[in-house]
Image 1 (cartoon, protein in one colour):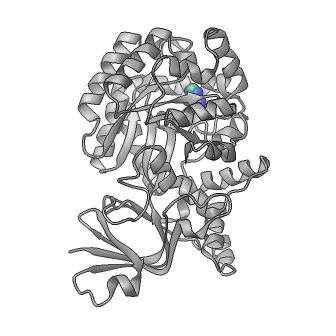
Image 2 (image 1 turned 135 degrees about the horizontal axis):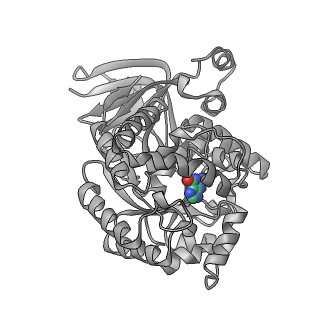
Length: 429
Ligand code: GUN
Ligand code: ZN
């Protein structure tokens, strides 16, 4: 029997843009989302959708806000151990915290329990899909895929490739990187809701031979993802220039090795020019905007307007542990502040887009997830803007959905996530 979830419902049909165009989202004050066998059947006003139907079971979330599950476009699962480490910029932070933390994942049991912890935290925060870096250890990616499979989550992940400029105990090499990734692709890519991302950490930690191996894999498996970092920090960019003096730009390093194509996903992209953005667009690449990380590591301010003007797909991302929260609500709030500092703005409806449909587009998954069009997979989240005392007080003053959503994302975190559903089943809350 189908199930109807009754609540206030909001979902995006397109990018509401900097003006928050209300034609790009739908809002039903008293709405119903009908789900059958893990798929969306219908969404709309409760009276219209439910009509005289007797053949549905109704789950009552009235007074709450029901939205598509959040999508985190870039996050490091082993960095749940080093989140909130004090005081460094990127390259020092990697040396001091990220690499020592990731070295613990040589222990497969440790990796397995961290993967379970990480995914349960995502779900508690209303995040139903993510693009995830594991560690250099193939078993860390195995552990994550196993845990995601148990939870029936749609997840994109990969083993990190790194064979220079990092601690010895975290190095693979070009051949083992290729062989391990290939084996993981064969085992996990397209297995249920899982997808594989070829994951060179960044240009600084791979030899040219390894980037070439990654490019070969990307060519042999065109429907996998390529997931890496780009132009995050000034010192990183200077080092890339030294290591690849022949390359006209940082982005061209990746292009040279065949890593720019549909389903290539670049985290950060703070220090780029118009030519880079054109290149990203022409090669159909996507970008992850990581606001809490960019402020925490002092990396810079993302230019959303220029990226969207260049028609590059952008999804929002936490980048934990450079980022400071797994909550996409907290991340939306920080995105708003980052854009304010850059003289731009972010209506709540666009923040929602960047965390749902826009993120699904950035991952090339919008056929499956991102909003409530009939036939899409039923991943959704129920939030309570009044879950905290200050939220409840503020909520009494609000009228429009833009206002209500904005207060929710500005004040919200996992306390506001009442329930998370994956594949039509309640998995958290
Ligand atoms: N660049 C290369 N590795 C990392 C990482 O782990 N975090 C961030 N924020 N940037 C990176
Ligand atoms: Zn990152």
